[in-house]
Amino acid sequence: MLHPMPLQRHEGHAVVQIRGLTCGYDKREVLSDVTLDIMEGDFVGLLGPSGSGKTTLLRTILGAVDIFQGQVVVEGVPTSQQRTKVGYVPQLETIDWNFPVTVQEVVMMGRTMDKRFFPWYSREDRMLAAEMMERLGISELANRHIRELSGGQQQRVFLARALVGSRRILLLDEPTSGVDIKTRDDVMHVLHELNHQGITIIMTTHEINAVAVHLPWIVCLNGRVLAEGPPTEVITSEILKLTYGADMPVIRYQGMTLVAESPHAYGRHAEEPEIQKLEAAHTNGSDQGTDHGSGNGHGHGHPHDHDHDQLEELEHKPVQPNPVQDQEQEVEHV
Ligand code: ADP
Ligand code: MG
Image (cartoon, rainbow, N blue to C red):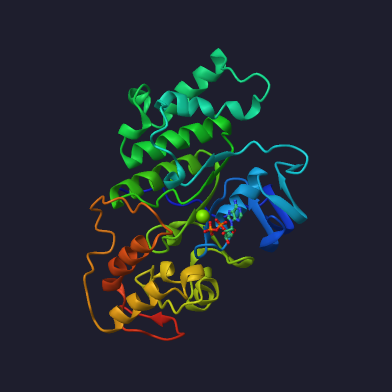
């Protein structure tokens, strides 16, 4: 599926301004001295290993994390003063799919954010929910239980819920994790379309080749901002090493950027024996890998558990070229 061309980085009006932000949980710093501007109409990808603070940054923009220093201003209003009006799509793995709720009910929840004192829905709320379901092609599913839907449909339901909350700024936490390749494409297509309609999007991702290189702007995080810019400038082996603490050769070929990626093996699990065993298996040439992203739909359910990490590792193996240490490879096509 051809996605609309990514819009270029916008100049002008910053809808989210983050200034000297240090924040975390129970006095423990997770992000330090983060300064970022998200411009109106941007489509920004946050990259970083597990535990680097991607989700925390999204939740800070929502106003849900303690700020120790600095400030976050959303559409001119500091989050410390007022709850922000942004749409949020949590990582779907965190959702309890047994919760008895229909598609329409989930979408309507996007309206309760403003209604702490009057938590019932108006006719206007229902109309807005119907409009968003229509826009995302899920009207027919309105009365179905969310558990009965495919991954792509579920992602659309939560997108509709976020859009009912805000039609200006969308924050998405790993919207392409745990879905097959067709669904990933579908989700990215919807996001590009929404971005073309003027919605500012900030999403986290761990998929560098499939997702990040196609976004107009990337921010690399690991406790602080390590780099930001268009993928052609930011996706280099030096910056990836800084971000993931790993050698990840970058190949530029016919205008494409390809990264020999295995970010799951690094970050906070890097010292764990399972990963070391797995790496040893790789060097010994044991190969149970399948095509990278073959789209067989076996839910990549739990990004932080070891089985999943191992599976990802094995799947990624066949795309690794001959190791090239600390050097960006330029492949010339003659
Ligand atoms: P990422 O999304 O990049 O994997 P997170 O933002 O989830 O990273 O986590 C960053 C750090 O903050 C991790 O060390 C994590 O354990 C910690 N953390 C995340 N959420 C909480 C929380 N609710 N309470 C305490 N610590 C947390
Ligand atoms: Mg996260």
